[in-house]
Image (cartoon, rainbow, N blue to C red; front, side, top):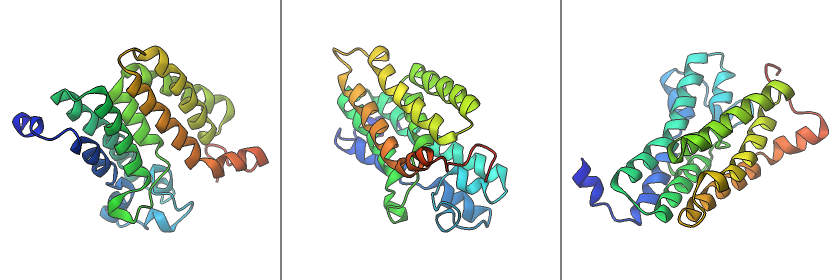
Length: 205
């Protein structure tokens, strides 16, 4: 296995990341549990939150786990073979963008928070810790999941400057900022609802 991985050309690693990300956990889990297609119900977002609307908490948990692993696995494999920081950053971006625009599911993906968490976890446990702590605190105070995701993403982007060596790991910082920027872009409707006071709080429909 290690010999096979080591023979993969550098330019193919980001492609692998994208293909990993393109596996829609929400759609696959919903089919396995014979639930409604998450792209056709609720918000239409193929993610754990929309699967949870089916009432099946176990299916939602499996979806969340799958989305996180899509960010973790390709980065850990790339790290294992010792790719450059530039390639590693592209793998992270590829996995994240694959979730947003999945090749295998009509390019209709989710908002990417769970996959971003997996990316942060695989790149540095410190990034994961920052995101997790900020998300929990913000969610507990505001009761808005979307606001917690946005603030945690922004803080994680700033934390990347402290976590990574700016002299030799600048590409990784750039990769994190790419993910943060698209996280905000995918949450633009949530931002509009937050401004209008129409965003539902955690536990509310």
